[in-house]
Amino acid sequence: MSDNRAAFRDAADRRFIIRDAEDQFAEDNEIVIRNAAISLNPVDKYTLYDRFPQIPGADVAGEVIEVGLDVTAFQEGDRVLGHALAIGTKENRHGAFQRYTAIPDNMAARIPRHISYQSAAALPLGVSTAAAALFQKDFLALSNPTVPPATLSEPRAVVIIGASGNVGSNAVQLAKAAGYTVIGTASTSSAKLVKDLGAQEVVDDRVNDKNVVVENVKKALNGMDICGVFDAAGMPGTHKLARDIVIAVSGRKIAVTTQSYEGEGLEFEGVTLMDVMAVAIQNNEVGKMVYGFLQKALQMKSYQVPDTVVVGKQLGDIYGNLDGRGKKIILME
Ligand SMILES: NC(=O)c1ccc[n+]([C@@H]2O[C@H](COP(=O)([O-])OP(=O)(O)OC[C@H]3O[C@@H](n4cnc5c(N)ncnc54)[C@H](OP(=O)(O)O)[C@@H]3O)[C@@H](O)[C@H]2O)c1
Image 1 (cartoon, protein in one colour):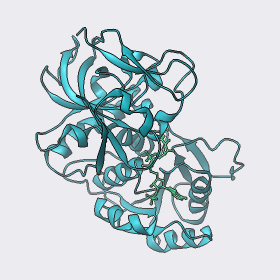
Image 2 (tube, protein in one colour):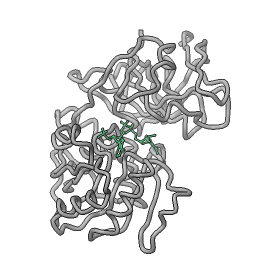
Image 3 (cartoon, protein in one colour):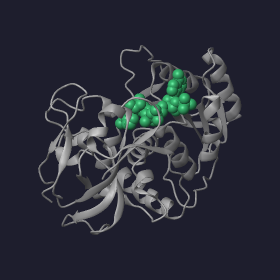
């Protein structure tokens, strides 16, 4: 493995420099993937941490070329997807924007032949972020997703704001597979997608008067208790909407978001507001659980992969494609 190349961020700006990189290796609990596809996420626009040079990127799919001593679930030649964790570990071995990436074995899943590397690479960060919010014990603490979907002894609901986005669409599918009734919010143009993913009702969240959105979510719940609200969009407007829904409906008074609430003055007595970090699930039971679920769900064709668009074939194509919506893929030559 002497042919590694990477997109390095050498300073606190968005620019990437493409150059040779060190060989990557697998620690005992890791696999090394030869990346066939990597995907771009909004977070890649920003400096990950204050150590340079750094190799950003979170999403990879490709072939396992090395397996650590303690790894039993994967072998060389497996087709896999993986969540690259450099934002958490600050180690360049764990960045996605290179030819080879080391991934802990609890943050990877084998992919069946009918799923392309292009589609698979779109999943890991969205899956991890949604799972971190929904299943970690200190967050919404839902019970685990299963194939086929679980049945709860008593019906329970979860509200997902930004249900059409990358994080949100995974959250809808995971919560549904765990047996929960999902009420999603999205723009009207995304409502069909969110329903197809498994939401029972989709509430239009682009009306100016957000009290109307709160009332419509309440109506959609029809008296059912919620386990909490997950704001997958993570914007100041959606932070307030999440809090207001929690206040207005019955059930657990907790809202979890993908971006910090800090400084927004949204604190309200009796309501817990939390922000989540996707990489946290590597350090608890949720990582292994959700990637095990994903592997089975993909195999059984019971998990939808997002639409993707290939925007380039080289690491040099990343920089110009960091802005804009949709799941953008670099299909590595
Ligand atoms: N904490 C973490 O570890 C972590 C990890 C990954 C991502 N994130 C963050 O999570 C957020 C979502 O990421 P993503 O990859 O899912 O992004 P995305 O795919 O671009 O989705 C954005 C979502 O926001 C919704 N949205 C846009 N404008 C809105 C508005 N004015 N009101 C309500 N909803 C609006 C979109 O709805 P429509 O499609 O209906 O327009 C869509 O559902 C980003 O801020 C990202 O940085 C955090």
